[in-house]
Image 1 (tube, rainbow over the protein chains, first blue to last red):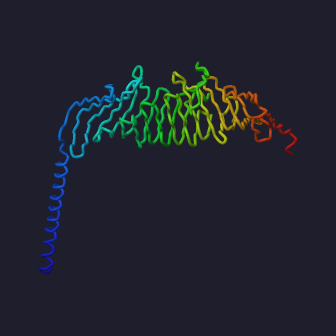
Image 2: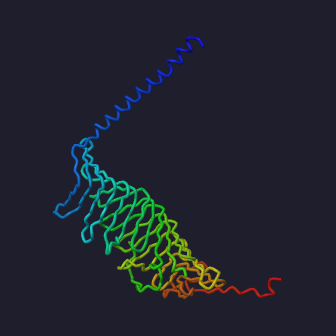
Image 3: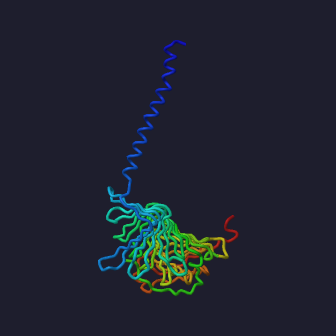
Length: 203
Length: 157
């Protein structure tokens, strides 16, 4: 084998190794930069914050196991967020998730993983409960929504849909597509005692 | 019987309104409960103060209903622009362009009450039948009963 080929065979692995080293160095540097950006300016454990309206009545209560605030984006990251949304004349609506983010100005709360909305009822049975994988809450608009599959459970029924929007104060829930409700037989059997009550038609 | 089975409702979208005590289903609505099947474009389910099912109103062009009576193997079928189902006494009221077919008997009229428990038609036209819209067969809303004569044994040869 000529000298020239022997040199090429020797240099090839060396070139490959040097390319690999350069790539690694660059990659670590980007990683460091990103980590540097994400340093919170303050953190808290066992956060418990109460928001009140102009009359001094409680509006929302936000608790979390851990909270980190990032000044440059004005964003707050939450671990184990738990939210209570107070409503006149009704029990507060409870919301929880594994993770959450609050944007600056607290207008939007993003929730991820094991997201659950419920209104407590008697004997541990919620009046209603909504479960999904991700949701967005707009506290000032008393509204929450998801575009993910969601399940609405009440003592009488279970409804699955893709996408749901809840208007908390009004007690209105829109199920956006592919809706399926199952009502227990006990609900629809004629031998129940309810009379035929005249209820107004919906406008 | 059918009423011992869960009821399933599917639709394109729905809206629950706790204050009004209603849930409105819209778009390709289908209701299934055992052998009972109903379909239409809008279903409004009413709950009473104790959150119990009171009644459901199905609308369609026309809404459709079928159910297998306990003692028969022929489905009862019904059509109407509007069907009101009352959960406490098992009645269904068919309103506007109503038609019920039970084996070889057909009922048509502007308003028919149908007892789903006893599979019995209580045919009644509205009191103001006179100015009711003319139904498909040209009648003025009064109920017509059409009984299809059974074929005599010799007829078919």
